[in-house]
Length: 315
Picture: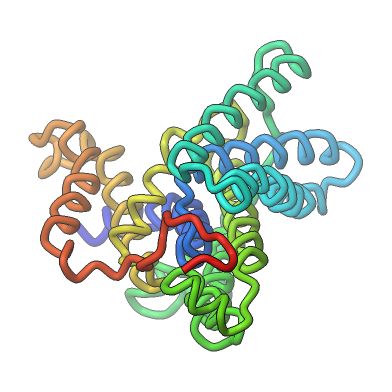
């Protein structure tokens, strides 16, 4: 059992990281009061942007192409999220419909451009991040083999972003304003907070993080852009809800989903799991999320004004 755990743990963590950074993006948006179910589409945009950038630059800049690709994914994710921000904040459009439109436009537009470029619609990169073991730390008994062996540098980058996100949301003036816009936007407005600016910034951060999630998926797991992220954006949204809109809760929820998905993928190779139909293991995280929503619905930590349009001067 220990051998099996040490073998699947690195894959579970690798699967968790794109979910984690995308879910953190959703956290910023929804904490400011803007529902963002367009995370799936923003991941697709980020994956596409990074695939184009990396495949173009790798022949001439092999060392830096991946990092530039990650940066381009964040930039294009943030820019694409402006569509959702404008519709939701300026036009007071239904935020769920706007997010759905983002998902539909992103998938269709990126596949169209990819087919124009390659004919097949797939964009393959030569290589992504390589696995590595952290010096010294990988020798620590038990946790060394689980957390510091066969890991990606992107894992530690995203965990650093998680820490910084917690600090920004709970320990800075910007974070206080962001949370106030999601709880009592009119009170924040009366106190002199520019609710429109805060919500725009939060949605753009959401787009940048979701774009980075798509890029991380490309350089660690997928290896090519094919027009889809297989529902990981929606899974990230489920993790956001399951984690009760808190950074550490999201970390636990995404790891739970990542570990469950990894178990489902290797279930046929594990005698104890082989008797369970694979589809049961794959839907298990979603079922648990629904049960958790029912149990904790009365004590939900969702921002009070999430999804509600804001108009300056109105009460």
